[in-house]
Amino acid sequence: MSEVLSLYVARESWVHQLHPLTKLSLAGFMLVGGLAVPGPWALYIFWALVTLPLAFLGGILGKLVLSTIRVAFPFALSVFLIQGFLWPGGTPLFKLGPLSMKQEGLAFAIASTGRIVMVVSSFLWFALTTRPDQLMVTLGQRGFPAGLSYMIVATLQIVPRFQARANAILDAQRSRGLETEGNLARRLKALLPLIVPLVLSSLIDVEERALAIETRGFNYPGRKTSLIAIQETSCEPAARVGILICAALVIGLSLWLR
Image 1 (tube, rainbow, N blue to C red):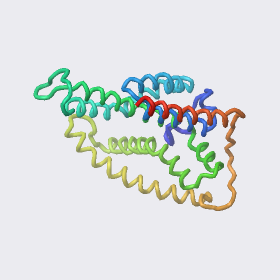
Image 2: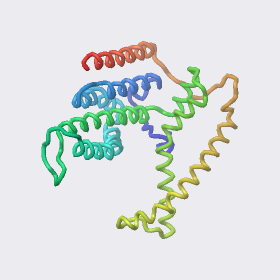
Image 3: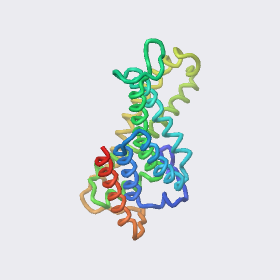
Image 4: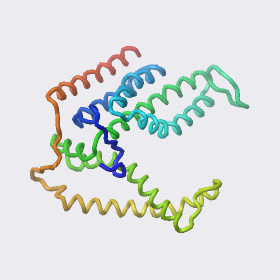
């Protein structure tokens, strides 16, 4: 599948060959671990022992790490600045003018950043290793409502679609002589010619996709068939149960430690 339509990266790996529900269970386990594991540094240990090896096995380690940093860095920076310098009370570590970095605020920022990294990386790992069409077919075969399945798949596709459309509009505006590089004022001036076509084209795309799925019998109540064959090994159902049990154990351990 084209990377323009999704975040999916085609690889001949063991992870890519897993059933979509198995990968969804693994992503859910990573998400639960990121939210439930106590302590600021335990989150990063969990990320290094679970998420990174799964990304390595899928051949997407570099892309996952870079994408996670790009998404999480703005949030992490704001958390460190706000919580570190504006934490009420606490133990000062160093001063920067009238403000001081608090030890408690820094610990909270480290833990919050770890949770952000876990949430982002679990979503990206699933999106990078799972084809959206296979996921939608799988959810339909398991009895999920068609509307809910479409919402899940559309969520995986919205970011790359917006990026591709924004790049196309930006190239078109540049070919017409619009200056998009330079100082901050020039870049802000170029935002309006980019945002207006992007919003209008997105609305048109929504209407076109709605018409397309209706012509393909999206709301037809009868049994649907698919050209895509979803392969599943005999041990994967038991593996999914084991993953869910591990997630429950992580939650129980977290509650006991707290």
